[in-house]
Amino acid sequence: MLALALLLAGCGNREKLVKVNGTATRNGKAVPNLGIHFVPEKGPSSHGRTDPLGQFTLTQSSGQEGVLVGAHKVWVQLPPQPQQKAELLRRAADPDMEDLLQKYGNPQTTPLTVEVKEGQESISVVLD
Image 1 (spheres, rainbow, N blue to C red):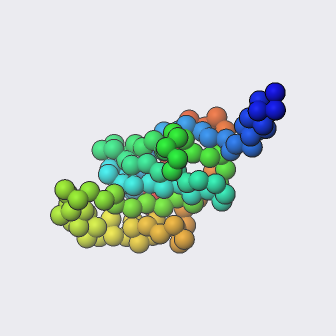
Image 2: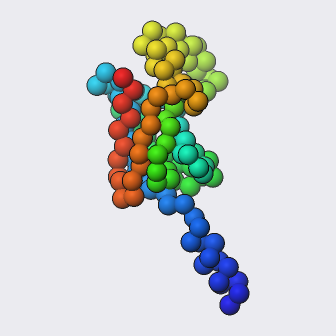
Image 3: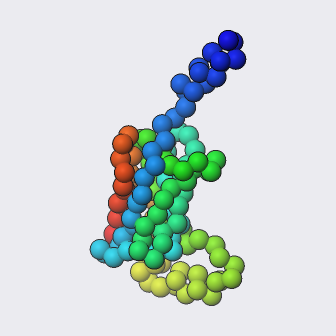
């Protein structure tokens, strides 16, 4: 009985995770192959990677799919891919990508915040 009571008490303290799909756009167009990070005020962050259509799914650092309910700072990066190093360097040198990374590429200075609500199914990340 004591073990069950402790287990139930521990479950009540868990943060609420929401499984959402998202889309990242810049100037109305999808941003493919971009690392997206959601950093809450408290608790573990979540991350994802955009596909060719700019769509992503978020996963917590622990490996659980989802993102915490609440406010998040959102920052982006070019995901490391050793086999495609030349492509990463080319994309990073692109003036539009360089501007995007300058503005949103640092978790401390990114101006982008997103509020995740319970029951939310999709998130739009607009990188303009």
